[in-house]
Image (cartoon, rainbow, N blue to C red; front, top):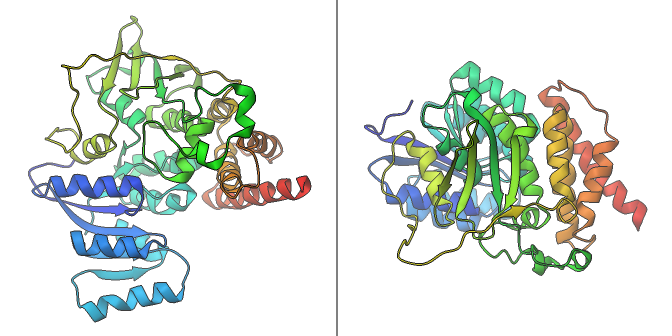
Amino acid sequence: MISLSQIRNVAILGSTGSIGRAALDVLSFNPAQFRLTAISCHQQTELLEQQIKASQPRYAVVTGPQTPNLTEWFSRGSQLQDATHRKLGMDHLVSLVQSDEVDIVVAAIVGIAGLESSLAAAHAGKRLALANKESLVVSGSLMMEAAKNSGSEILPVDSEHSAIFQCLRSGHQPSDLRRIILTASGGPLRDWPIDKLSKATVDDALSHPTWQMGRKITVDSATMMNKALEVIEAKWLFGLEPDQIEVVIHPQSIIHSMVEFQDGSVIGQLSPPDMRLPIQYALTFPQRVASPSPKMDWAKPMQLDWKPADPERYPALLLGFEVAKRGGTCGAVLNAANEAAVQLFLDHKIKLTEIATICREILDHHHFSPTPTLSELFELDQWGRNEVQRWINTKC
């Protein structure tokens, strides 16, 4: 357990994304508790350079492919003679999160690209503030085993899983729990007629009414694949069976999730929608300190609504429950197929409604294994992406 009486050294992986930027804001709000040791990005070097100037981390790592621009960025450090050590490549990032210079790792790299560094942090016994849900979706058993063996704390940064984590911190026993209820905004198309969803454009799918997120995650919200992945993630984080997890649509995004106990009591976590709150709680747990997040205004009237998630509108959600039940290689295949299909949609090559269809077909046709190795999971990830491309080629 990390104590707030000492400054903790933090590495933010994926610092140029929405979660990474919010994490930097949390650290700047709490300079007496945290020291920024490292930041990283895949290829947004211009924004990374701005973050270097503003935060002066000890290390900055770029993991993207070698390009002339990347070479120029790398050499800029010696020219400027700043205090930040620049590194290139995933190997440097993995070594860094395992080093004694880092206490807490904020894993905010999007997609399976974040798996290797998240798993390295778990093996090294770090506190892992996990925003990269794919790490658990793809390799939940390996992640949880690594954390158990090393003593690593995996604390969720997703607002929904943070809410569940907070609701369960009151000394309850596992047998007290009946189920958890994950809330979902419903995405930008929640009020569209179902028969119109196939006509949704990229701009339509990216117009989220509540959250400001990256393009891939926003599309996942439109299809509800983000909630499907969160169902799988919740299984691993909280040791649940799929039938102990429910999903409801909550448009206001004020109730971030709830826990129902055996006696019928329900405890929920409420706050205005702002990712800085769950990020900060993962950093400061078990203590709470002032945060830069907005607070509830109890002087204003407010209505809180929820309704069941319609599987006809959100077929991707059913895939999440199926994968959570089967386990094994299913998470890797579903995640790979979804990432590839979302990119096809963003490239205007398929319809939004075809994303779940593609994922279903590829999941149904993969060679299932209940206990895959990490190398097998990476191989299946590539297989799933190749199958998506083969699917689109047969349709052209």
